[in-house]
Length: 114
Image 1 (spheres, rainbow, N blue to C red):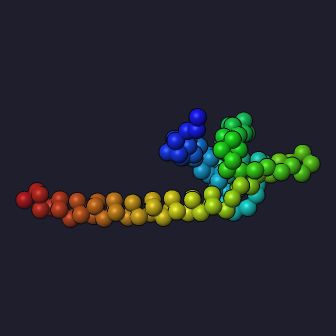
Image 2 (image 1 turned 90 degrees about the vertical axis):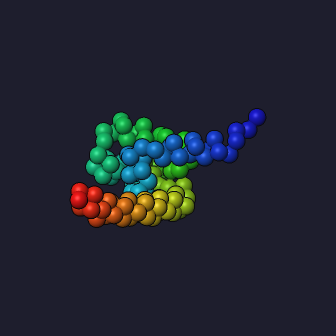
Image 3 (image 1 turned 45 degrees about the vertical axis):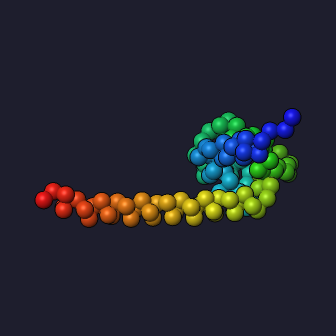
């Protein structure tokens, strides 16, 4: 029995729901990286980064290639980078709206004190 699409989508977004995984995907949006290149950029221990990369691999968001003893990671599709860009635009709009509301609240504050 297949799972409903909304459940699959929820699992997909759950895989993205970690700051380290988002940072990894941002880095891989630029180019492929080895684990050693990502470590200082992500700012977590190697074992933890390995766990996060495993989650991304299981969700088929990243692929690996090995060169000697070095493993390189890259995005499985440029659409992953596009998804991150869309999320950034949405957040920018949301935060701009919140700043606008904050400005409105601040503007109304002196009137409320009278």
